Amino acid sequence: MDIKNNTANIVSISRIFVAFIAIGLLFVGTAQAYIWSVVFTIVAFAMDGLDGYIARKYNQASEWGSVLDILGDRIVEASYWVAFAVMGWLSIIFPLICVTRAFTTDGIRSVALSKGMTAFGEKSMQSSAWGKFICGSKFMRISYAVAKVAAFVLLICANTPGLVASISIPLSMVAVNLAWIAIIFCVVRAIPVVAESGKLFS
Image 1 (tube, rainbow, N blue to C red):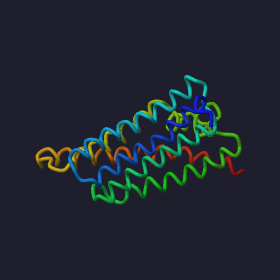
Image 2: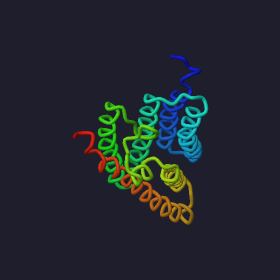
Image 3: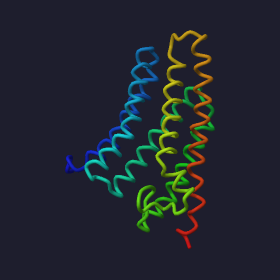
Image 4: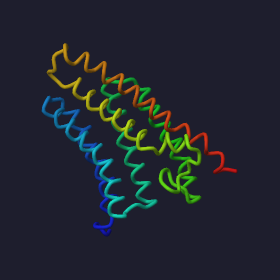
């Protein structure tokens, strides 16, 4: 692999392992491990923006890069939802919604890719203005990312071993509300993909 011309793709793949480290630390069960988990979680989500920046700045954007970016998003997001449900911090409905949405949208997008379309950008499969806004606009993508990272970080902080109840309980309430906002974003951003998929099969 030409590392110099695939920096963005390497970042996309690497952040999956950074997220895995963050999640693994949760099962260590110490306050120090949870602090490091927060740090690695923030880094993993920062890398999501970094790969796109590198791709645009150094002209490394490609269909393969787009697929890797989405693949990384799905693995990282689903892994956190599953981990939080396993630990009893959230209902099982969160990972179920996330996984169902991922299979649905990415199945449709794989058909679009075979027809020369991409999820975002100039060759986006979204043809309507509202579809492009919900799926591809910077506002929606950043809002969704902020809701996710805030929910994930606060959930970890709220459940840090040794944290007093007067802090952990209200923090947990805020985190769960943010988790609901993030999962609603997740569903809403899938609607245009499903709604505009008919043209792919006509």
